[in-house]
Length: 108
Image (cartoon, rainbow, N blue to C red):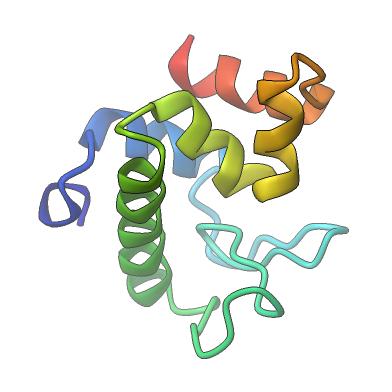
């Protein structure tokens, strides 16, 4: 799915590992669901509990974020993890602790 979306497969594997540990039944206090930890409120119509659908959606969402941020993987990951507000904070040098941890775990 990463290849089809034109994103780095190794980074996508690390991203999903950080998101859910590849647990299709994972959930978060913020309302994220499934293997790719997608929040249904922000992404209606995605069956977050279907691993294949969720992974396909997540890969294409990362492609979209990469296109938005000029292929900047850091900003794409920050957006995936925390949304546009997290990206704005990152750009101001006020990155959320969660965003910093997330990027560090995936990109090293």
